[in-house]
Every structure is written in structure tokens, then in C-alpha cells.
Image 1: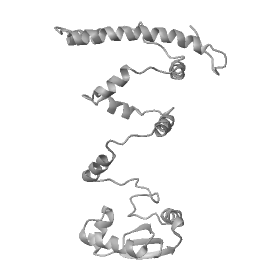
Image 2: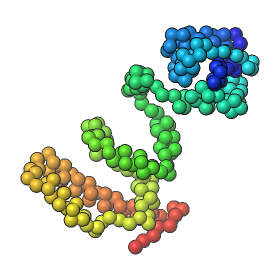
Image 3: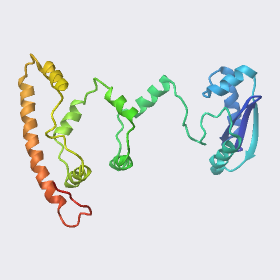
Image 4: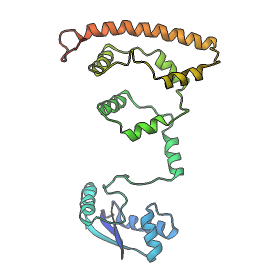
Length: 239
């Protein structure tokens, strides 16, 4: 079994790849190309145009060095038929609907560990969302939280550290309290509520919301006090 770097080429382009078993990889490529099921559509089109491709080994190396030399070959040759420009990466591949459905089904029900959640949360700190992404999120109408998610949000109690972080993030920002809606907005709200009958369930939710707002106000008072606690390495601006 020989491992190394190879090239699949036609008169108009090349494909650079690496394989632990070059003989088997060559057989796999040609088997898929002949049956018209190769996952690289550019290679498949080249096969259809020229009727054949030349498989050529350019380097024999150890298994652990395959990606290193494959990347060097890609950078040097800039092969036209490589969809991915990074050795060993699926970047740039477009998967079929069937493949995406299988991947989704395989991941369904899996839960991330707390360590993974913490790492993902840390990686998103300071990340800025583009205006285009914001518009797409705003256009997602009809999306609703599950009952389980709603229950978790209702019973969530933020830690002192979390409240300090929230307070710190709002320092220097202007509050919208006291800023009235425009006449047009008020008219839209009025038209939407006109003739609406509030059910007992909604009334109960509104009452619960008022209770939670009062609780949050009390928490904010405690937050201000905690921000003034000696040892916190930032300045609290009042007024």
C-alpha cells in the first residue's frame, strides 16, 4: 500500500489529491467517473468532454505528511478542478438535498456537552452581525419558540456575573425609556388591537410579566450596587 500525492489531468485542467492507498484511489475515481456519479462535478464534466483523464503520481510520502504536501501542491499548481482550495477541507462543496437530509437525521437528538457550549459562547463574544444577516433574520416570520424553550426562559434566573456583564454592555448606551412612538406606529398598534378580546390566559401572562418587571427592577438596583463593589476592574458612569 503506497501513499502519496497524485494529479488527475485533462488538456484543460488538473485535480490535485492525496491518498493513503494510491491504487485504490485511482480505481475509485475512474469507477465513479465511468458511472457518472463522481462527487466532483467539474471532474465529471471534464470526463464527459474528453472521454478520459490521466492519473499521475507526483510524490510518494508518509501517511502523516499527506495533507502537508497536498496543500503545497495545490498552492503551487492552482489546479482548476479542485473545488476545495484547502487540503482535507470540505470548504466549497455543495451537498445534495439527500446528503443534507441524512446529515441532519444523524445529528438529530444529539446534545452538546457543557464544555462545547462554553467554547461556542466564548467564540461568539464580540462577533458583529452584518446588515444583510440582520435583514434575513428580520424576514423570518412565523418562527416560534417551542413550549420547552419558553418554559426554560420563564424559569431562568441570571447569575450575578451574567447581570454584571449585561450591565457593563449597556454602559454609555442611550435608553429608549421615555421615547414615544411615531403617530404612524401608534396608528398601526391601535389598528392591530382594535376589537381584540384579551383571554384569561393572556391576562395571566400580562400579570406575570408585570411581576417579572418589578423583580428585574429590584435586581437592577442590586446590580448597581455590585458594580460599585471594590475589585471590579471597570468604571461605573452614573447620570
